[in-house]
Length: 159
Length: 150
Image 1 (spheres, each protein chain N blue to C red):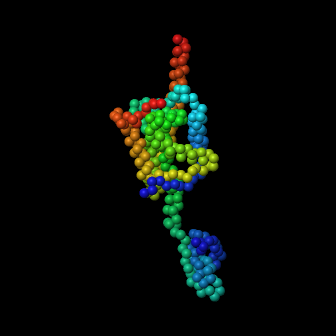
Image 2: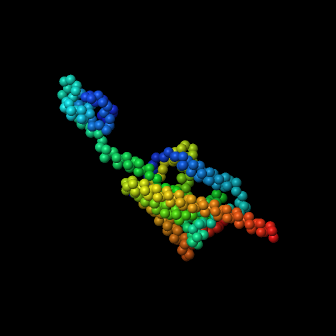
Image 3: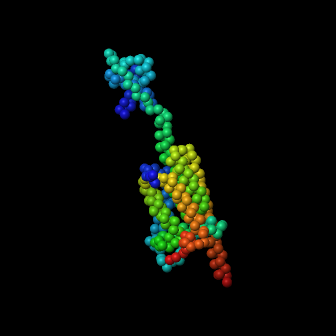
């Protein structure tokens, strides 16, 4: 929109930002703040009898959901991690994480950003729990196996 | 209904880079093992499944660690018999790994794959059904149980 490029108000001399309601004179194409036009009631150019052409600023309500949905696109659902934790860490905890991941993606598709964020966090926590339990278990078993091998080897050697 | 959508790559933070480094190192270790292993050497023992140790039942991941070692030996069939679902997820795992490599190289992931919610639920129910079926002691469900073959 060319009329949205930054302009200087012909009445007050201030900048017209995208948040301002813009008025452009139909006669000389001079730009004004809408409130400045309404105050003066006419174009400031000498002899110009132009009519006001209104370009209202985009409504904040219209802008907010677009922003929210673009943020919502970045809500991670941790599905890959959840599946990896379930398959590789041997963890039923990972199944819970998959449920939350699926819920997060459902909420996201329904446009419910708050719920998606909440379930996304839950998915991450369960993924983390599954991974930590899995890794701790593997480390413990490995240590136990080493100790066992050491003891039995010791016994064999003593016989 | 679109089953999935592709979204632009995301910039990776510090944590993602560390995770990528870890995962790529593990994969590189697997590749090294594949290139250097001796077919005569005994299989590496893997830690037993926690769930199976506690309950005596198979979990969806039982056999996956042995399957990974078989994969590293290039033995796809042996890996399949240990955990068929793992093999089905393998293309996704390869994609995930490639993304990790790209994060390490460029700091940005590959274009991200977003599944339709219905598909994420489908994956959940597939894993759940797999979990139940593995524990049914009747043919053909017993085919899903981990078996060591060569």
